[in-house]
Image 1 (tube, one colour):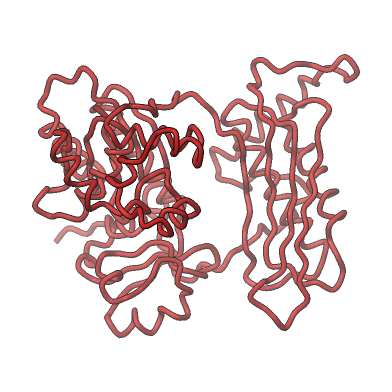
Image 2 (cartoon, rainbow, N blue to C red; image 1 turned 180 degrees about the horizontal axis):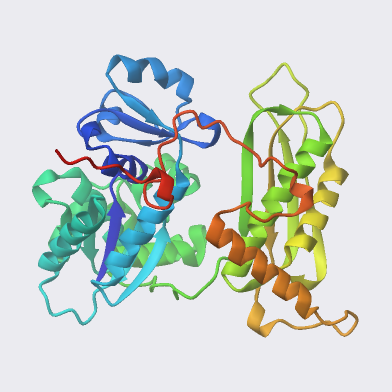
Length: 419
């Protein structure tokens, strides 16, 4: 048996932990630069605010219903996610963190009745972190995903859906939209819509050879999982990410190459910190630039470039140097750029890094410099120690509605007054 722990409206729930007065009121959280709605409370959904809707379109509706808006506070959300996952890990034997607000877990060998365990997990996480979660338990990960959605939809389940009997699974799949099944996606959803295959049960009844011919082995695994045949084991938790991306949209169009160089240098620095944190080195670095596609009155230009290192590296200095050179190669005068990003790829474990016969061995002084850089920034916050290429002032996004970092900054802790 597998379980899925899914945080309910996670970003909104994080804000409500420290603002209980917002319970029962419409609340939304915005994307970078306060552009679009990326999280909604149930009350916000009920009044018609859509996921991804531009904030300027939703603002009036939100104000008329006494709602509240927040800018994304990823420092707070990341810390509360860590607390949720730590609590979950203390209750089960093995977990796979799927996203910032979701984690699968293995229930093999648990003696406690699984439905009771699911409710205990839910109640413990709520008590320890303040975050409401939904628990889905089923024979496979894909079915556990469906069970967690049912736990959210039906209050009578009290936040936990234990779906294990064949007749119950068949009944659920006969009504569950195929488009909403994990692993189907938008592209295959359109294909099946055209074929009038609309439910998960209709998909299960297809011939295996047909599924493999149209969708490959990935489709077969989804097909098997829906039949209760485990085909997606928990991923190794020690596995590192195979790509690191830092990108941002800007509050306004940027025409100056020098200003973009400082921003890209900061992005490359952030990528380097993440790379070293997971103990990897990279072989490639990509840089991309984009103009504002929503401004039909302005000329458009989108381009990217990449560089391959002869020896895999994790050096911030090398990443900043190559990132800036790539930027200069793709920058064009006269265009107002709205977004830029740095992407690292081609990862290898640092512990098994192959040295080149034609390159000098890495300088231990440089390694110590990176260690000091990371140690200072972990202790005092990102940007406390940085490269000269990043400039004096860090890149700032529009965040007019950002909340406090209640759990990670001494100066922003809640103040409690006793009468």
